[in-house]
Length: 304
Ligand code: 13P
Ligand code: SF4
Image (cartoon, rainbow, N blue to C red; front, side, top):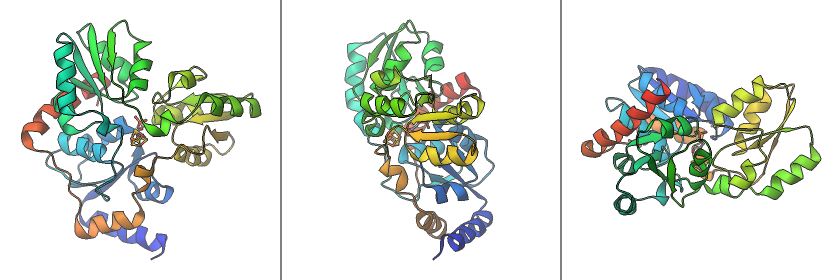
């Protein structure tokens, strides 16, 4: 079926089911076009809380749908592709985190939302890339175990006087962006401003004019007086920026910066989700209530 016809069918079923589609910036263009809201991890969480819909179809990866289900248990949350996961989220397990907590009994656990519900349930508070510094500084403890992203944790440690115990996790999409990628583009476009995501390695972030979440990058590109930008995150967002700001120029820092898990969600999989009402994402109640506390604390720090 043609994309246009699939999109029309999705729209019809969405209305019938009182549903919304939430999509992350890294998903495919045609997927973002059928979404009711496109955003970063924090804004998607907020939309899930505030929406009056009965059904949320999450165009993103598993931990995002799981977070929506944790905070909005009465809504039916569907992930169109059940194996769209985040490899970084799998880099921390409950067992390993418990061992780390035993080593640092005075530390609070701050967990990036890119983590399983079970790990969130084992944590004191969650954070996203747009509020990580504020979240860490809001915690009373002097010591923090920060899981699972070592790069986001290292970025936060530059903006706090707390002692941060880093976890060795990383996002392969951002970790594979090298210093040489940015050096090459800086030579080609010396006037371009480099906007980078904090999941990038510290030696890459050293070149950045601003270090921001995906929503932050979109806002900054509009606000800035610069007319050329090098974008240090998953490359899908560059298309988004070009359409939003047609008078400005955008260059992806690396053509290899692609999150294949986000790309698993297609228009066909969304249509299938509405037709079969699959795949439901639900968290066992004893895990959900604990994980919700960590997410609620985060939302209280960042304001809902
Ligand atoms: P944000 O959505 O917080 O910018 O994070 C990017 C990301 O990697 C999501 O998986
Ligand atoms: Fe996970 Fe990285 Fe993909 Fe985000 S971009 S979902 S952190 S692998």
